[in-house]
Length: 378
Image 1 (cartoon, helix red, strand yellow):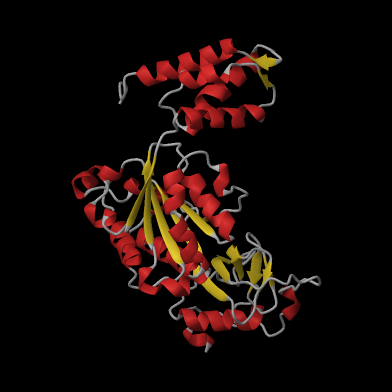
Image 2: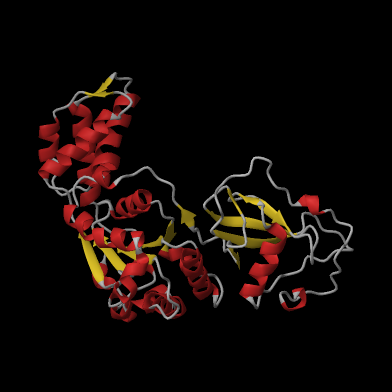
């Protein structure tokens, strides 16, 4: 069976290698591993007697059986390693993804071998953010109820599943935060990916990374894929010549979003600040579009109250006055461009509190940046 799993050159298994090299914890966790994604690393050292082979899997089901047989009962933690003790003694595999983390491999565990590019970051987010922590965006939160109901009972929906949803709106309005809260409240994994990281260095890299991303999400379903900055790869065709050839990436993404390989229990959320720039082929795949708006005066007041309570020094300012000066700002702008700048100014001056003078300085700085000519040095 092993002979049809991998293509190798002149590698002979060492029958004297101890099985104890793949350790099993004494205090084993009760959690069963649902998904383990491995990256081929190689031998821990090289010498002229040993060649570091490149593994090529051409039957994923057989590889999974091979891996389950020798690693069943092993504890898997993201970032740790498993060592082969059969065909390639001491050959290392890095655990890129384990769901749940610190769990035990069983004969029900999905084990995948993937290639990981340094540019691609697939993050399983652990967060304490609740839906109620997001100030404003009530319409967006209401529309997300269908996603929550589907992920709780994916078998009920069948062809009525909300598979692809687009979040769009001004930067800093809570698109990523809402996706994190969905993952946290439902206790499902969130795969958070920047669209730019899906463009590989070589032909085929981008398509492979997209297929691996959806394969991992499907194996750990119910789950959420969040692709930020969708316009980076999904530009309208009339703009694509400016960004290089991304047709390979777009085609792979369309294949996955169309559900040719059905991913039950997986919701794909795309996020963009510029929905009008998206290619029609991409945008038409989203059956729901959810707009994120800038906070109104009441919401800005709540945001400012929340942030000023956590500042390291006292904020001695009139928030009602500040609210009126911050029209058109997002929650991120309020924190990063106003409160943080004012706080740092107060600390530079060795003050015990943040005063209105510090706020005036921050507001002036923000206004100056807004009025700067764009692309003047391009």
